[in-house]
Length: 406
Image (cartoon, rainbow, N blue to C red; front, side, top):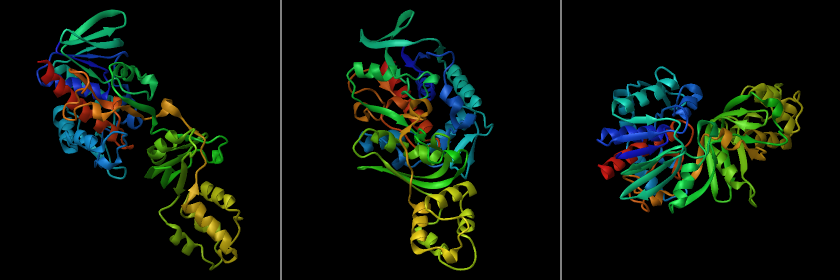
């Protein structure tokens, strides 16, 4: 066997496609019964396959950023779009309001089916129920140990086992542990793009209320800002904006300076709200606020600012107005924890980008070993960025492994 790819998720499937396309005899190993399970659950079952635009600055990594940029640019966004539409047979549509791309069919199952179909047509062999327990250099190539099966030998190995997020899909960190045993630096892992919780939950009675917000999380030098959907849950907060800043909160847990999270509930800034709440007329403060945010949230914000709902603008004191402006534009969001890997979209941390060649993703420590996808120390925001990373790193690793092994 020229190339063995371990892990049939998004990155692994793409790696196998490109390794086989380059002429390598390619075997794709998957521990579950099928593979591609994160593809199936992404985008609410629609599969947010790519973003409409790619902003490299929105990726998070603890590795040198110039390496991240090289990897992302190795397969530009428009070339990825062309691949899916013309080679994989998956026509895409842009969702303008969210800046996301989905399959026209709006079915994640179609994405998985056509990717695996393309892999088969390119000559990839898929073996399911194959749990790899170890990989090691052996006789100029690599030995792959599989639980309950005979070991395999390959000229090159691609580790595409993912991280620790959504363990029910088959991710358990085995690949990261293998990489560590082989001498790689594995930056501390943590749940990323995960909902936050508050115990007790001060806004628990707002569960189900959603709205677009701007949100900032800061803990010491770590800072993240996002704009987008926000959802109150029974346990805390979710929605794209919360997920996009959650890594700052997660990484600050247990530290001397836990993250402070602030929310601006509307597009209006403090100056605009100060003007809107100036004395004048018989309108109630509740009516003014209720025109900009959902009614249940308006009531909660007024209560937190200590303002009766029946109070009119004419009777609003300066101190009350300033408290309410703060509650609307700089509201501190109490939090105590997060939903962890169980609900995390991705894993933060992972194998240092400095230990792979950015053009091929071959390990700098082990010749013939390639790493891709969520195993690497980088992740992007909600909106197709992490699939973009999976596709780009999978392709680079597949082509690199094929060149190494043939």
